[in-house]
Structure formats: structure tokens, C-alpha cells
Image 1: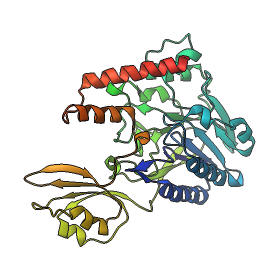
Image 2: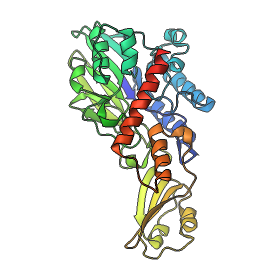
Image 3: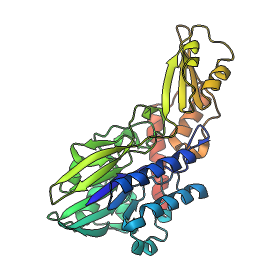
Image 4: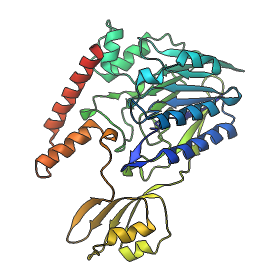
Length: 376
């Protein structure tokens, strides 16, 4: 049985107030083609479908069209919610969709959802574990001792009746200790949201979401598919792909990456003004760093002729080093609370960044607010 594993679509995301919906639509078209060319039996979408918990109508329509195309010809589609998603919104009409072969994780009620598929080698169980916070698990599994994210995930896995003699796939959206992160992911200070890789021993494949760089952790079958597009300049060096999982009899799993090619790449460029202007015109999203000792006052305007999607502009030479945003700062609704707090603190303190104590206090307040909200 062949599966296509992807995650972190972040539909509706922007870069410096530039909508990425056209780029996302194009990359989803490529993913549909990969599913068709690989003759995938099922598609696993491991969370962060949307950029925010209340997605705009255009993003929802795009995902609806994408899933509808994937589900053609009897292909099964599995979707779990991520930390950017609303579990309740994602699960709307989930029961109505099941007969069409689309399985969406429901709001957590104490146990994982399981769907069993069959092929010539027997049963394949797909377990769906949406993004969980400790407070959610505490409420539904009060007998378990839960001090953090690892305890929460462990409690849910222990409560599941997983027959390890059969083939089992787990869909999960968490931080796994040892993964390579980027600036795009939101995480708790001090790594309190880390989960040990050893918790997933015994599963034939773990389809992870949350981290944007494709990678396996400890073993090849514990894998992040990564995001299909680059969502920050820290991802400029990433090679985006979806993972093709070919599952044979118990213990035999083959993986390969199917590369994805965006209509506009995201790149870091540096050099002198004359050198950069001699390069080919491009509509890629770029951060340009000029190395000239004397920078003309109209350098940004000059560069924008060749690079109309220049999102950031910097000057680095022997005398100065500073960054200038070419376009307006990214919309507040697309930035995390810690990012907004850091900006506000710096503005009020002559550019000084908040210290570790400030960020720990902020993290504590946010977690208390979240627990109070969940309890209410």
C-alpha cells in the first residue's frame, strides 16, 4: 500500500503582507499530480492545514478543492489538526465525509481515532493524533500523571489498544526531540513541548507534522514531511518535497522524496549593486544584502526593477549594518504573540531585546490563559 505524506500547508499565510495563496494553489496542484503519478492509495496530511485557527474563506475553498481532487478514484485522505488549526473547525462535517474516504481528526475526547485499511498483506491501521496540549489530556484522562507535553502524548498512546503485530501508521503533530527547526515554527520556551522519539517505537511509520524541514528522526520511519513551501528566510536552503511511503508486509517500508518546485522561490541574495543588477530578472521572493561601501539613496528602487518581490533589504559594509523592510511589516494577525511582545519591548526600551526571564514569564502567562480558556 502506498501513502503520500505531507504537512504544514499553512493555507492563508502571508510574507510581508504578500498573499501566498497563488503560490499555495500551484504547489497543491503539484501534490495532486504526485499522488496521481505515484498511484498513491492514501494521503496523510499531518496538521497545520491553515495559518490561523479562523481561516479566511479563500483558504478554506482552496483546501476543499485540494481534498476533493485527492479523494477522486477511491483515494483515501487523512487529516489531523495542528497547533495553528482549530480542532473544532477542522472536524466540522468529519462524520459526513467518512463515506467518501476522507477522514478528519475530531476534537480530542480521550482517545485516538483509528481507521483500518486492507491490502494483500492484511490490515494497515492509521491512528490519528492531532496536536495536543497537556491541559486537554488532563481533562480527558484524569487518572494519568501529566506534567508536560511528553507525559500527555505518552498517556494517549498508552491508552490506545495498538496491536503491534499488525502494521500501524501514526499521524502526529508535535515537536520531537532532536529535530532541526527553523524560524517558522512556534514553540514553547525552554523546549517544554519536546517529545521523545522513543515514545513511537513499534509503529511502522510515524507521519509527523510541525517542523518545516523534511527530515527523519533517529530512524527513517519517524519522519517530518516538511512544509510544501518556504515560509521564512530561515528556510531558504530547504529542498521541499512530499514523502512517498511504500508499505509492504510487516517490517518492510520504503521511503522516497518527491520534490516540489514553487512558482516563486524564496532566496537570500547578496553582492554589490552593479553585480545584482546584471543578474536575470526574477519574481522570486528575495532578501537582498548590499555589500557596497557607498550605497546610492535610490538603491531599493533600482533593485526593485530587477527584483519586484524584494521583501527585505539590508546593507552590510565596513561602516554600517542595518536592515530595512521594503514593504510594511507583516500583519499582526500572522505573527505570534512572543514576536509581537519582543517588538513592543524593543520599541519601549531603545531597541533592547527582552531577556530570558521576560520570555519565561510571558510563556507562563500564556499557558495559564490557555488552561483557563480550556477549563471554561
